[in-house]
Length: 475
Image 1 (cartoon, one colour):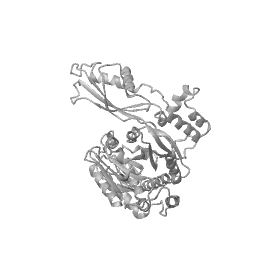
Image 2 (cartoon, one colour):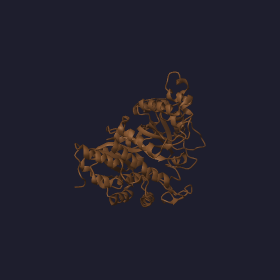
Image 3 (cartoon, one colour):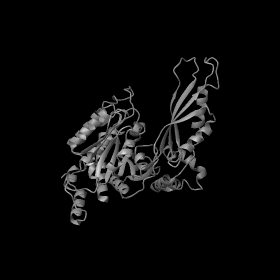
Image 4 (tube, one colour):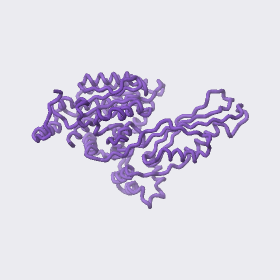
């Protein structure tokens, strides 16, 4: 038998289990050997160029590491374009209530540019820092999660824990999740038996509280914006020679459309999650500025709230739709030829209560040109905000034990992650990166010189271990 069963009605054995978990003898400080192994595993993992659609090689390497550690493996999809697997304390077939740590294998592209201090797929370890694409988003997080779950294998073999703990690795998150989380929720939810998903979200950051900039604040997401990728196309034939300028060329029409889209003031929209977030933020901040934040949506402050929110870019994105031009292209041609078509792509992030169809209708009214065609390239599913329950407060407790004197804030995540697929199926999902980061490191994600200090990486392992411990004790 894989583990010794404990009768749930046996109070003595249940008490022993609780004491065992609460006072387990190993230290949360990672020993030097395991530290070295974890750092080397991440360094090697970074070397795989696991762009979206090419995750299998990196996934197989990570699967081997999980198997060697003694975790139970289940492969859901085994393709280069869709490699999805789980590594668990107990076999999924036992159908124990499952706490799932969600991580994606794919990374965004990175050229071997001179802007990088070290080549982006070198996995270089220098100055007590790990460098390379994915070390933070999210290969590094995946290795942390594996180390944390693995540390409970001995306990899980001796006693029947109230939950299974699983790291779920999926493909294609950076391109919408269709070959990863989407496949899992459509085909494997019953086997996964997830009671809670803990995925990508906010990290620990200082400087977010004006009255107390040294206070470390963790942003624990309970909801997130909907992603909407749009393609705009204009086909317009005019005279071809650019020596005869035309205000009705494809480019002229597209540029006017871009101007009308990007220069429109976004509507401020509060929902239950953001109202609660601003109230909590105001209480944490205190003073006059805290009072203003707490009552930002009140009738008296509404005439001033846009100016107040615009002074804090992170706050204004919480309550408005964002529209970002990401690509503009014409058919190839010499500089003296007016192109007959123009194509642009926009990455839109919508407040959860905003309807996609209504948003597109408003765009068309704003553009005022029927020749500008709008096509939906991709959009994320909608899921209701996850309620705060004992597991949320268990995560909060874990963060405060690893990072004393920090504060934890439930938020609407301004980006979109694979968590949305699980929320769309009614599965409670929280997003958190239990790491202490600074602005420079955060800005390296999807950019050059992505990195994570070794000390931050190891403390992240401790944080995930503590999250597991606190969730077990919350049962």
